[in-house]
Image 1 (cartoon, rainbow, N blue to C red):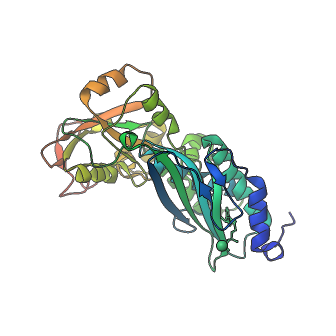
Image 2: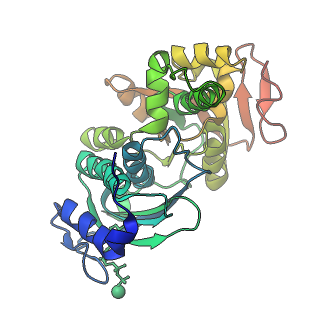
Image 3: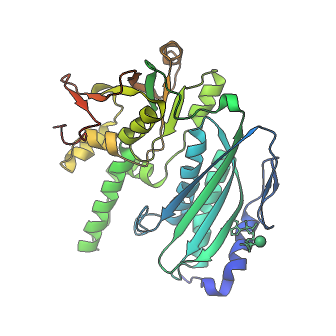
Length: 342
Ligand code: ADP
Ligand code: MG
């Protein structure tokens, strides 16, 4: 395929292309791409703002990441943090640094994915920066949202005996990454063998094209439920649990038998000779929501049809305990999980 050299297009050409592709849809987006800064109208009392970076070679590998998926994911990872505050993102800014290996067609593919995500989540791309990089692709996003103080949920307000819940199931994004890395190695060893990902579709999809759980926030507002504390799972369940418990000055008990794990996570981890539970506890990039609610409210939630699983509860006692199926208790402050789980 003939590709168009970015040197011919130039920075302004790239920005013009982006500008032509994105139209503001939110009434709060007063000025978007095109001026020195965006102008956002805010009637609510609090601005919620969060940034995330994705670096080639650290956060993604372009040999198995389609640029369209990467564009989508670059938006989603930023939105997820705003949803984790029980709030709705409305605008995003996306900065990109490009090396000379990228063509205009590559940029178009990337922004196709960005556009899909903006449409899916009904947000506006209102700005960014475009610059060159001496090595690979760097993406930095900043998402904005607005909410009243009373509706925002933070990490530091969990209460003793709160039920700890998680949306969806855990581990698929991590196992998907293992599969992609294995296929890449096989391909390098023998380029004639085409990667076979059919059996791992849902795993690979969660790694390459994650969802932010807007539907869970919709569900909370629709049913008048407000969690006491919440965080999104970007680094892994165990570290996010520790963030919540530390911020709230509590401990927790989590039960192995309760953890939501899909069958393909179990079978694929077994294929790799790894413990399935470690994908669930330490697998990153899930973008599921981890939150706590009082038991009374949990009872209400339990009768409603939503993929939320209770996995344990917070405790006054500042111990972070993982209860194995055989009732053995592991204190995860003093020892890591993996050391103990056979
Ligand atoms: P300045 O030189 O004043 O910083 P730029 O030429 O970098 O302005 O940007 C011009 C406009 O284009 C601004 O509104 C900026 O937000 C937007 N823009 C630049 N790069 C991007 C990008 N990658 N994505 C979206 N908007 C961009
Ligand atoms: Mg300027």
